[in-house]
Image (cartoon, rainbow, N blue to C red; front, top):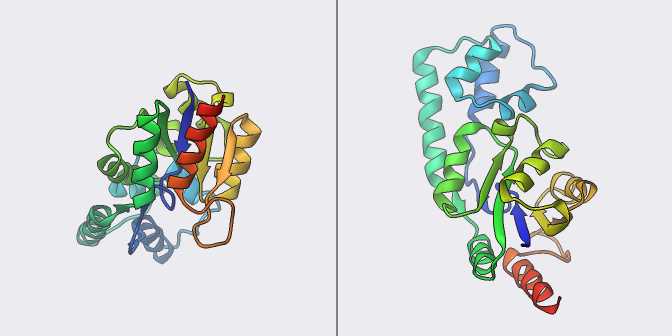
Length: 204
């Protein structure tokens, strides 16, 4: 069984106006004398924390009213996240052709709900906050392959990061692809990508 793994943000879904809620939490920390740490972003993406939990674990005090305001901004942001048309088309084509399809994404916990709202019927969802590792760590690629029940050699992965969605998967034994909608590249849209994979499968 062949499988295709998609990155999420910038690949299958898009944020129109980001509120950067976790960055706002970190700014509260700066005002309190907490110096930003190089691994803050990684910590936030490898733990299943909402905003209040993140502030607590990072030792940052946020006024309840301020926290409520940030949460409202996040809720609005999540509700306005939309799917790329070519992403919906590609997933439908691949599933119709018998491929297993999954998402593998570096993200904070609240954002998973938006992915599953827009793509509710995938065969697997592998998130950094659940796995405890971020791409291009092999641990997250192994997790999604395990969820799908496939070997890396059976998988194509695509996304908008050369490091995380092309080079990392390729080093792990998958076929990694770089999506660049804005440039004259070999891969500019997911519908054409899906058609290519389906044609390749039929020719085998």
